[in-house]
Length: 186
Image (cartoon, rainbow, N blue to C red; front, side, top):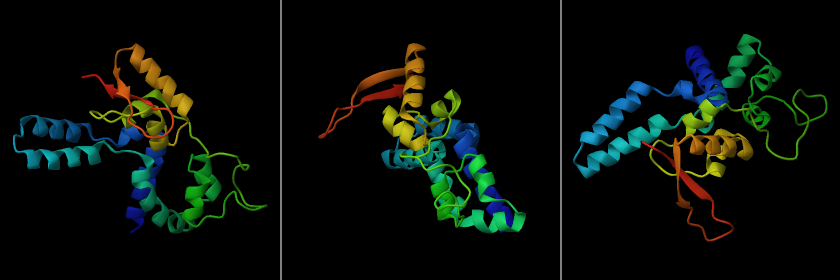
């Protein structure tokens, strides 16, 4: 159990710091090769589902396991909630895990903010979180990463200029301004 808890914590911390390190490139390559050679449409759907799961390295995928394991593991190891905060774990996630952080006077945690706490992301982590085949918007990608929209937008602009992405048109919407969709170039 202790190993499972530590593994859940390790995966979640990796997902919030650099999701790309959680992707198994050999598995992704094998799945893409299977998809390219498979003729049966039902089998292709199954392979696509496996591929989507293998590509998903967003923190949300690992959050529930972290929430279940973190508090007991931290108590056993003498790790404080503040240590998790310092590693970039959101106070809301820590509260869900049973830590008393950032909500009452005298508790550890960051000062209250008007909006959600955003984490710093690298160009590599933004690129790793992009779907490999499907179109995406910068807002959806920022939400998936827990990163700021302007940061993700700038990475997308840079990748557009470098020819790594292409615009595929406006998102279909019934409310508000439609967002531009992007896709990786292959």
